[in-house]
Image 1 (cartoon, rainbow, N blue to C red):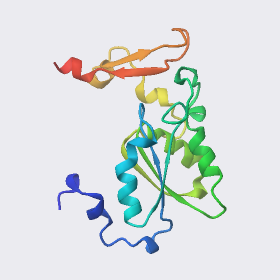
Image 2: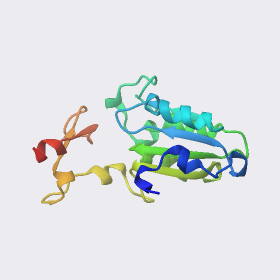
Image 3: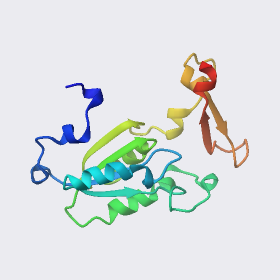
Length: 175
């Protein structure tokens, strides 16, 4: 079986909901998205008998907030950490993060290791302990890394403050 073309149905074959430590998936979107991006995944997982929650992070989806005013990862992931914190005692979840959602679930895992059964990183950023999210995307002087050269940082709060967003213009460099 070609693992790159593995469908959810194929991946779940032979796995029984009752055999898992938990059947509750918590889906965390990537940058520029919202919980809405998981709608097909939610339908497939629920059809297979799993409980699914998709979280809108601060300033995303239905969570209205000016993203230019987000000052920290903890502020950005607050809807996720609030959700995990409110889980009943003894309940665990499987966190799934896509893209920048990986950094968010890493953060939640550090705060609530006893409430996380597993974590799934889908084309996602995974922070190491003590690593800043800016470390992952920061540009280095003289770097030959094409991805780092393609990043354009946006400073909505002024150039004397950390960047509030970045554009990834890799396609422009390839054309």
